[in-house]
Image (cartoon, rainbow over all chains, first blue to last red; front, side, top):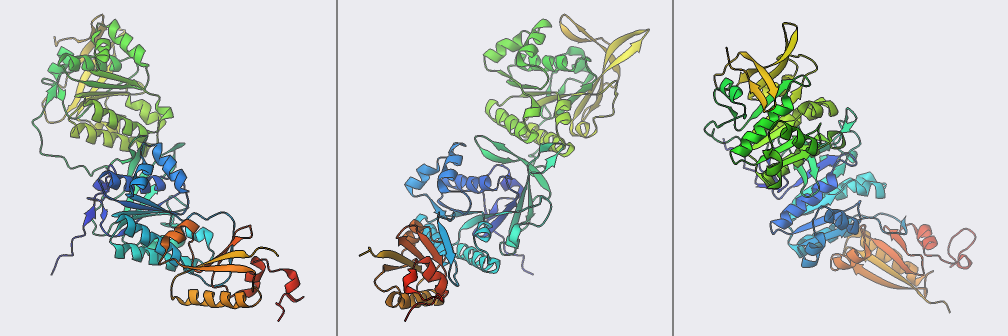
Length: 471
Length: 102
């Protein structure tokens, strides 16, 4: 038996989309992108064309809903200069928005003019990519839905004959209902992608799902995406990233001698180390030691804090003798970013972290704290954030330390899905001893390495954290 | 004498609907509309740029450019009553039943 013919793919250039479609959209075919109002359909359609234009391809944008001048202006706000491409003849916009004035029906008609205009624009620009936004537009302008369906099928047929790779958007009314209004998917049946924007714990969460893909081989399930004000849509492939051959295990110093010893030398250099414990146990201070150790080794460090201002953090570090942080920040080797996650969705935060990682190329990253992010987001969005973070630090080989606050003396439990994602787990606790509380530290887990499981006393003094040696 | 109006008919060459629209409009032009309008016929397959400029989606489409307001009549013009009403045929020239006078 002959294997099925391989379906050629067109890499879209949209961050992450090619990963979840195992290489891109079927070349020379039409793909449907369905989504509710505000789910990012138009953005994805425009970005699909812009990515092609940036790679020297030519494109046609067919618009039913938004006027060309609005599309050009909205694209400009993301730094995409459609005007330049229009003037250069690389891009044509076919404006199918209803003109002003009365339209009166006087008998039978078809959409021959529409098809002729799209065909002419494709021929004039020699377009490789076409975006149609949104296919449902005709249904609202013309009452005979049977006619509209027939004519849309004709348009798609004509795009296929022209050999272009098309992305066609369609509106849907329910996040988890029928694929698209007017059953548009029935004639763009090869490939269907759904954008969602559901409300979860009072916060919108954007996801993208490939429902079916001509040629198969796509990543199943919903993948979160964020919208970056410079790069547009960035899809976070949950499991799409292939890990390369395992690099030799890199160990990095936490910056606290006794704790490094407990970890048989240090913590993993390309994974997440989770430090959890109750408030006041020393989590943020420990993170500052980790930062200082990196700077001391000449590494660049990215430090995100969600509970403290940047200035307070630097002052606290100075107070325990870690004065190098402020100086390193001035020199550009340390970037301390303070954010209120309540005002920023987790997808957008992830996109921001991803961008900072790409730009700064840090060897160490601190997230202080994950529990704040957990608190302000839905469970699913948080899990996806952590998974995306694990992939990022592994790909960029960044030693990452995350703090996580547990309600009280939580011991080893509580932080379930985060702890399974981390390669190293350090617990900070308060223990009552002879009527007084003292702090302790224990390395609960360290993947791929032997470690000292004992719980040791931890002290915070003028020189920061010290671990009391075993008696 | 009132100035003549301008009509533009967008068609796709040699389709049944377009031929029907041209036949219907020719009959009107030579009959009740005689002397009132100048007519121009544009084949959108030959001149897609004209369809682009006029933002024409459906064919056939008849556009009354003048007198204002601009009106777009979509379809093969077989609904004679609607066509005449839309083209502002003066009441004086229609009978009480709405039928045009012989």
